[in-house]
Length: 321
Image (cartoon, rainbow, N blue to C red; front, side, top):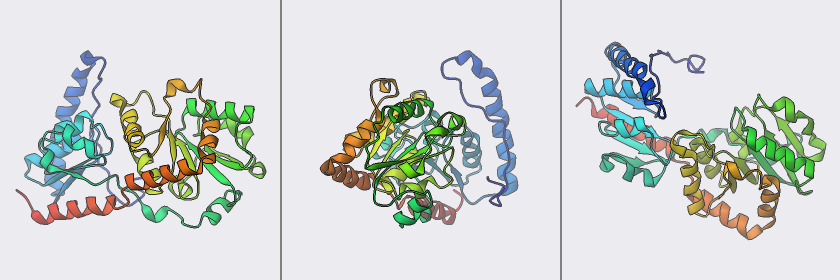
């Protein structure tokens, strides 16, 4: 994707830490050492005005090398609970952009933290609900639920939705857009029936645009998914991925639950909760939907991209330390 967009991509031998088996981290430390050396060469050759890291272990050696070269640095943390790399880099980065206000208190130098939200391509949201739904052979007159476990799908969510479909718990006045992910699509393709208001696809290439045309979302609680949902001001049922690092998806979803902007169902509860039934009950309560929409919209930060770009440009103009 990077090279297809016209940018140069340089690989480094970075590896993530093994949290539960620390004795396996000796190769990781060696990879970190080699990566830092490689990044120093890259920094010298490319000679950037500013270095930007977007979280994850790959950015660690890059930002460290830039800092050692006195190049201004900015890092961005998507999740409410900062990862190990963000906590480490926040001690040296000139600016730390975060998506959640609570994150600032978890970092080493809160004065360098700016709450910006997560960057989004707002231009991809189609405001024409009718045209978006018509492209999927659905009606703009019916309430619409979107189910997504991300581009790879979520097996536990898919199993639950299939169970609801077999039991007939999707309300008659509600239609469904269901992104299964490529791995599970063959198992659930049989439910695809646009004439009855059910569209099943393995992957929706512009999921954000689809969100602009639906009334409720059932999804995992990844940071960018939350940013997209709140930018659209949508009610949501979040089912956090239980094996995410440091359980950060639960922390992400909990922030919206605390703001009365969403409902959360733990993955382990899916054998007792019918997600389609729960979604139908929510949509039937117009006052609840109004409240969730209002609070979701308040939580959203559609200006995030502009705020982050402004900081990057400011640092570039500021020049080396």
